[in-house]
Image (cartoon, rainbow, N blue to C red; front, side, top):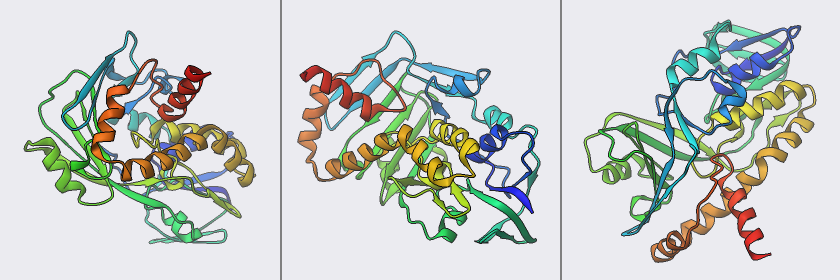
Length: 317
């Protein structure tokens, strides 16, 4: 019997494995040699985890767009970075031995794959938004859908669009030429309308939303499997790295693991749920007014909502 079985070798699973003490006996199970081919947009916190990550572009300009209104904000220092996604993926997996099998189910200490049964004292689900581990534990998650494609870039910064004609989520443009959109339904249709272009290399993917439980008995969930995703930009790299390191210290104490990651990420995710409920029922004209009144400075790309709320509180005190 192994100490740990890690299901999934993406950002969360791979970084969790690298963060474990050397004397821990673990195996990683993941059938895939693929990664999400998005632009790899992250905050400066990436350098806390991987100082040598290759940066393709520094982002200093932000444009917030509604319906017939837009605001641009320019910063002296980069607030985000576009990294080399392929090179980062290879760095994460370097030195790891991965069992390339499909996990079918989890039952107690047993992990059943298409080639046999593995046993471990602890099972870690890092297998993404449609997690087999999470489903085996009976834990529910809200799912949105994202899609992105590529065309010639138009702007040397980030564009974020809050226009309800493109659905109940938001859309974005990144200077790599990536056009993307998140919504609950008609995602691909809305993406094509938003871009107005013939996009190449279109990808669609599920995105988990909201606070959820991240453990049952001897199992814990990390990364997208635990809905540890930024509630505004829906990026998961930094949140996965943070949670993986916490999990590597507290995997034997699942309740404490959940308490610890929630103390760091939980409030931002909770605010995201409130924001989505408000945005869903807010008429576009009031969204436009909010954009007009918006003040943006010292953007924290990972904690946009909580830092904005904190700034508003200080302004009124």
